[in-house]
Amino acid sequence: MRIRGSVVPLAFVALLLPRLGAAQSATRPAPSFEISFPASAHGAPITGRVYVALSRTFDGKRTPIDQTGENGVPLFALNVSALAPGQPVVIDASAAGYPVKRLGDIPAGTYWAEPFVNVYTEFHRADGHTVWLHMDQWEGQNWKRSPGNLYGTPVKITFDPKSSTPIRLVADKVIPPVTIPPDNEYVKRFKIQSALLTKWWGHPIYLGATVLLPKGYDAHPNVRYPVVYSQGHFSLREPGRGATAEWLSDSTPRVILVTLQHPSPFYDDSYAVNSANEGPYDDAIIQELIPEVERRFRVIGQPWARLLTGGSTGGWISLAQQIFHPDFYGGTWSLCPDAVDFRYHQIVNIYSDTNAYWMDHGWMKVERPDVRSPDGNIKTMMKDENWYELTVGDSSRSGGQWDIWEAAYGPVGANGYPKRIWNKETGVIDHETAKYWKEHFDLRERLERNWSTLGPKLHDKINVYVGDADSYYLNDAVHLLDDFLSKTTSPRWTGEIVFQPGAPHCWGPPLPTLLQKMAAHMEKSAPAGADTKSWRY
Image (cartoon, rainbow, N blue to C red; front, side, top):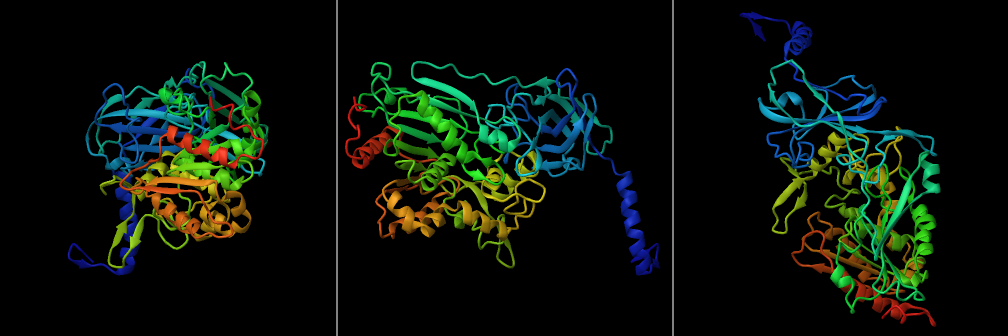
């Protein structure tokens, strides 16, 4: 190395370079935002996560926060602990960012900026861990819509990455409580506090149900009905997605259709499992919520007349519930389920692949896609959705899809939060954690390992439907499930798995078709003397 024509000893250079770097860092402008909230919006200190979103456009409806996502506008965030009203928190180069990683890399220009505060709750869990997570407010664990979270009106700013003058924003508005839709003749809702989950979390935890009654329910007071539990994401809407005409048709079997609400502090639903990170949601649903449904409404209350369906997340839940409780339910018709075999966790083999984001071919690395169109065009890469979640919340606290799988399927980490299946930054897979997933929640593996005992109970109860161009590649794992079930003996599986060519997520037969299949199955499987006629008016 030469300075002003002189040769500088290497040892001196080694001492000089860190000092030069420090000097440059000290003089480099550091753009920043200062975000605060007033006592009028929240009177107590807040532990949680603070955000600022930047957008080039704002139409008065979709705010910058609304525009964030894996293909969205820049979002920057950091955690805060006991942040007092009026006390500013600084979002600068140290904040996590997506899709732009560092605030200083935002180009100079005019933007709309919106501040946001996601409020966390302290949980003293029964497993001895104390954790901070966002407590669902019956909105379905959506931080952008959760009552009590704070936001500010988007402000038009001029951003200069060379400026060290902070831009001050105030989150002075509070998201109001959820408005529960009104019940009517056919739709009924209720909500209960779970004793099991409240004890485990050390905080009140609630479960609920939305019930769609059949045509003629009040006019036939002596009739008891089969019940279909339609599993899926949190929703307070009418079950069946408002298919009123079909529901009231004379050809539709008269059943009670129920959606269950079981949001957890990690996601809009718990995946209905007993989880090391989430607690006994499976027990609470089976022992508390379903008995309450069947106490309040006239259901037959026998396994042959207690059926399951659901799509995507609900597809996995409906299949898992049937497998975990083979004697409790009479059959499942699962649509486009999440990975039923972790050799295809979407398109990642968590057992043998080394990296979830890239495939290493020696001279080059190829990125793994996350979402596709039926024509093959890629919408999102695997790393992008994961990196977006990491900006929304560290320690599996984003409320996102990949984070809930870690919370539902994985063990607890040393810090009390879910142990990662892979490094969220690099994509490197932890195969020890993968072994835990396999032992507890790989549905195909569980069936194969226990077919001698599960087969006699499930051989005619498993039905799965998926598009063979599923947007999230979920058909690949279903093919592995189909390969196993098709080869079973003693007993032989007699259900159906259907792959719809070219269909995206979430393909499946429409509800009236499924109900006809369910009614035929119940008439075939009902024990002698069971009532299979009075509810077929």
